[in-house]
Image 1 (cartoon, one colour):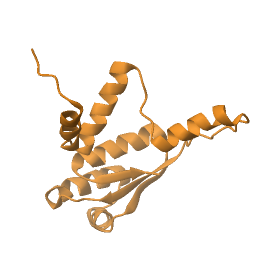
Image 2 (image 1 turned 90 degrees about the vertical axis):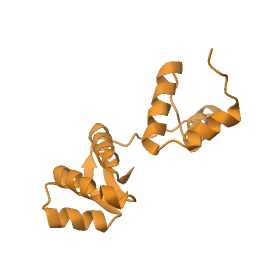
Image 3 (image 1 turned 90 degrees about the horizontal axis):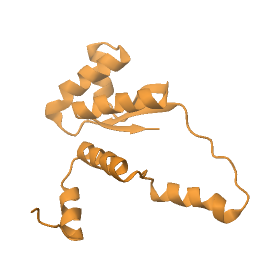
Length: 132
């Protein structure tokens, strides 16, 4: 029988995960329990219309910008440059300059699905990425 973990052991285990592993964990928990993770600010805003009475429609963002924040692991920099070249169609020198000049926009005005795919590609290569 598996040992039951206490809250502190679970928190310690989670703190040792990479960002990608943590994202996979959140997705697994969402699927297992049929819930959706929401940032604390998002929860407050979601509850506000119910509490406040007069609800205003919040526009959902449809276009995103994929921003390369950096490449902390210098050994994976070449992989990031290759992915940037693939995504942007830039030459080697321009892609290298973009990666070294981070934070920089890699792709602008893309739909949610595409932006998430590009983010995953870049993160898998070793980059830190943000969607705006």
